[in-house]
Image 1: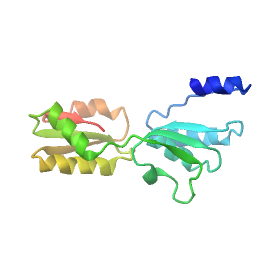
Image 2 (image 1 turned 135 degrees about the vertical axis):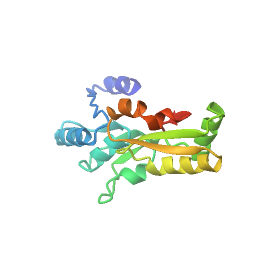
Image 3 (image 1 turned 180 degrees about the vertical axis):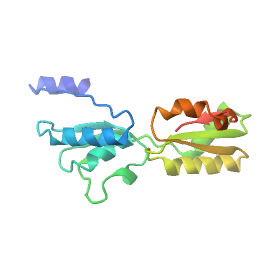
Image 4 (image 1 turned 45 degrees about the horizontal axis):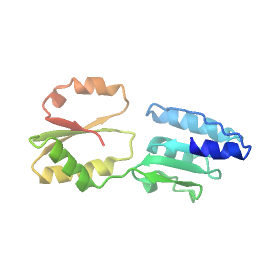
Length: 168
C-alpha cells in the first residue's frame, strides 16, 4: 500500500493484478506466459517457488520480485543470468524446525512430513527427516501431487498411524 501511495504522488498509475495457480504447475506456466506477453506490465511480484520459477523461464528483462521462496538458486532458469530477479527467502534452518517439532509434539514417535511433489523443498524435507530420525522419530514422507489429494491422504491408514504431520 505504501508503494502505491508513493507512486500516486508522482502521477504514476499503479495497477495490481492478482493471479493464483492453485499450486498447479501447468496453471503457473500458463499464467506466466500470459503475463509475460503483456508488455504494459513493468514489473512482477511473485509469491512462492512455483510462480517464481514459471515466470523466470519466460521473462528475462523486466524485474521479478519474489517472496516466500526457500531455495531461490534451485528454481531459477539455469540458461539465463537471472539479473532481473531478486527477493526474500523464507528458508528456516533445519535445526530450528526440528527443535520446534520436538517442543510442539514432544511425545511424537512417528511424524509425517507432507509436501507437494511440485514444491522445491525436497532437500529441506529430507534434512528435517534425517534430524528427526537422529532424535529417535520415525518419519513417513507424504507426497501429494495436487491440493485435492490431501483429503484422501488424511483418510488413509498410513496417516492414521502418525502422531503428527508437519508441512514446511
